[in-house]
Amino acid sequence: MKIHFFENGGAGSLTAEISGDCDLYNAQHLFADMTEKINGGYKTLCMDFSGVGYLDSSGIWAIIRIIKHAQSSGADLVFRGITGTVRKVLRLSNILSIIKEGP
Image 1 (cartoon, rainbow, N blue to C red):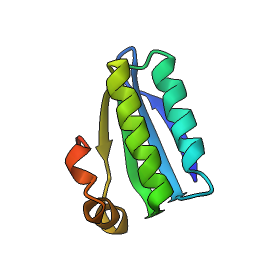
Image 2: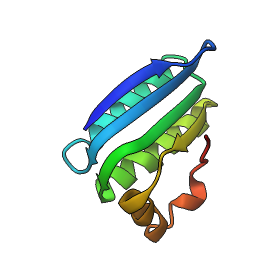
Image 3: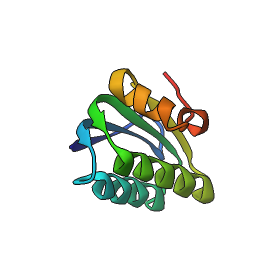
Image 4: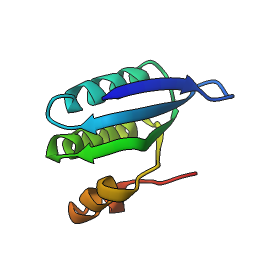
C-alpha cells in the first residue's frame, strides 16, 4: 500500500491518495500516517480509496480508528473513491453508515 499526501488549496486541508491493498500488513501504517497528519494540525482531510483493490478486517479496523481519532480531534474527514470490492466489504461490515463520502 502507498499513501501520497497532497495539500489542498487552503491551510489545514489535505488529501491522502491510497493505493494497493489495505490489509493486515499495512493497516497500522495507514492509521499511524493519518493520525500523524491529524495531530499535526490538518483539520480537513480526504481519504481517496480509488486506488485500493483489497480491504480486509484490519483495514476496516484502521478506518474506524481514524474516523474516531478525527472526531475526537475536531477534524473533518471525508472519503472518496470507495467502489467495487472495497465498497462491498464496507457495506457488508456495516461501516458505510459511519463514513462521510464526498466528491
